[in-house]
Image 1 (cartoon, rainbow, N blue to C red):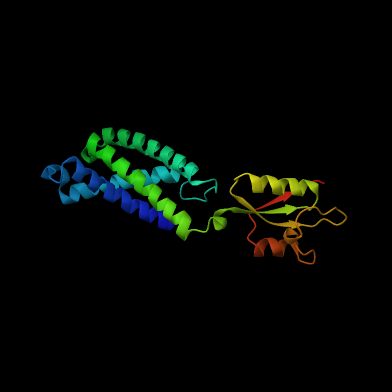
Image 2: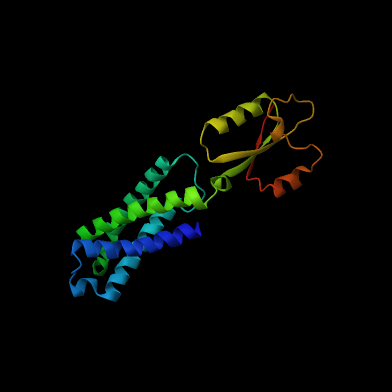
Amino acid sequence: SIMLLVSESLVGVLAVHVGVWIRFAGEAPEHYSHGPELLMRSLFFALVMVMSMAATGRYQRVLDDGFSAEILRVGISFIIGMVALGLLFYVFPDIFIGRGTNGLAMAFAFVLFLAIRWFFYHYIIDTDVLKRKIMIFGEGENARLVLNLVQSTPFGVRIVGCWPIPGAGRVVPEALVVDNGEDLLDWVIQNDIDEIVKIVR
């Protein structure tokens, strides 16, 4: 999350510089793009975009339901950021970067944000680590149904194990059944379990 936040913050700063350069073909007016002023505008743009991403949970655990869903979520974040920037530019006109420059910066940032996330999810982040770890308290037919539901639907969770109940029939895969000789609390702590799903029968 920290790596993504830092990377995308830098992209946000770069996006405004690129937008100004493209908009004015490398010859922006000095009063508009003087070093400190442009840096202030670009930092403000980056801050708003990163806060919009954070507001939609883009720096928290992600659901492993495909990159197309991530594109949609980032798109929603950018829409929120676009609206926020429009309002803030009205309140603070000194940081206004122009509609053309803002549009170019948004487009550039959107493409690079997605490129960064694709790279992170494919080469840096183990998506299994980002999933919530679930333990099923039970090993019967209902436990098997929960297991099949999780495996067939991208909920962003991972079944770590099934805790056996004495006298209950066992229909879940043997590899998922926890050794009954272990202490429940110790096993939950050791495996960093986020949630326990209790099967009634």
